[in-house]
Length: 88
Image (cartoon, rainbow, N blue to C red; front, top):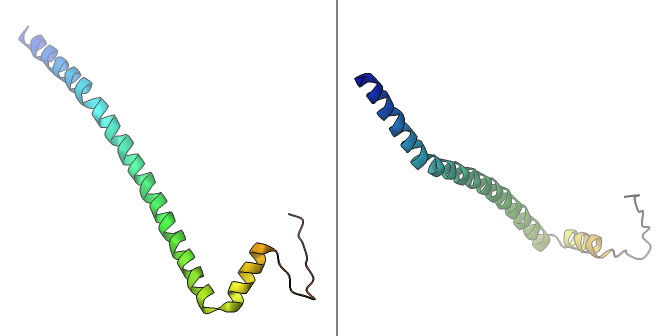
């Protein structure tokens, strides 16, 4: 009889423990996953930022590169150049 009471109390406390702590644990796991996703996104953005900084530096130091990028962006051709368009 005493063993049944101990088992019943243990099951009761385990049930209470699950009811109290499981929602918090689930929320913690969700926040950890969001944190990992945010860190990955931040790493990607930091890398992209470094690439853009290098491109800015190159444009400041190389006028020919800056002209090339501007002409590509604006679609401008020099006199006498022939434009070949791909079938994209």
